Length: 292
Image (tube, rainbow, N blue to C red; front, side, top):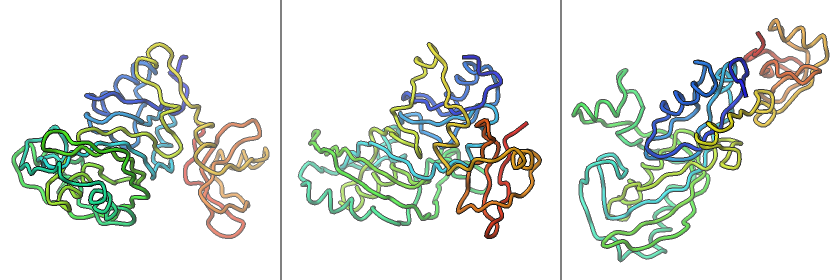
C-alpha cells in the first residue's frame, strides 16, 4: 500500500539485535514518510511487539492506553551482571542449581502487585538531562530512585538447571515503566544468588498483541497498517457524532455530550476526528483533534 499520506499504526514483531530507532528508520522507508514514531522502547536484545504510529497517528501514540504490557522472559539465577541482562559484564556468580520450584515461586511472589522498583542502571531514564545508560558507558556510577510500578501477574512457565545456574521462564503482565530486567536482578538478590535476564519477548502492548504484529520481512513484502480509525476504536470508547457536532469538533469546540472517560469521536461517515474528555456532567472538551 502507499502510506505516504495515510495515517495508522504499524504493529511490528521486532527482531533481536535492532534498536527501536532502527525499526522506525526501516518503517519510514517502507511508508514513504518521515513522520513515524514508536510507543515504548524495546532493548536491542528484546523481541516482540513494538507499536509505531505513521503520519497523524504519531500524535495518537501519547494518548493510547498502552499502559499495560505483557512479556515472556527467561531469568538466569546464579549470575549477576552490570546491565541486569546477558549483554553486561559478570559481577558475581553463585551456584543456584539447588533451588527448588517452591523457593522460586515464593521469591517471585514478592514482586507481584504495586511495588517500588529501582530501574536498571542501563536504562533510558534521564539523570540531570543525560540518559542513565550513557552515564554508565562513560564510567559513572548511577543510582536511580525507586519508582512505583504494578505487576499484575507473574507466572512461572518452566525452570531447568544449566550447569551451576538455574534458568526460569516467566510470563509477566505489568504497567508501563516496569523493567523486567530489574525483576530478574531483584529475584536473584532475594534468593541470594544473583540473577539477570537472558531473553525477553514482549507479547502485547495495550490491545495489540503478536497476533496482529508483522515482521519487518513481512512488511517488506506487503506494507500494512491498522488505520487510525480502527486503532482508536480498538483502544478507546467510541462516540458517534451528528453532522453539526462534527463541524464543531473540527474547529475544537466543546460538545454538550455525556462522556465517562477519554473517548474517540467519529463523524457520521466513520472518520476519526478527535479525542474528547469530560469536563463536567453533560459537557466534554477536546484533548486532541486529528483532522487537517
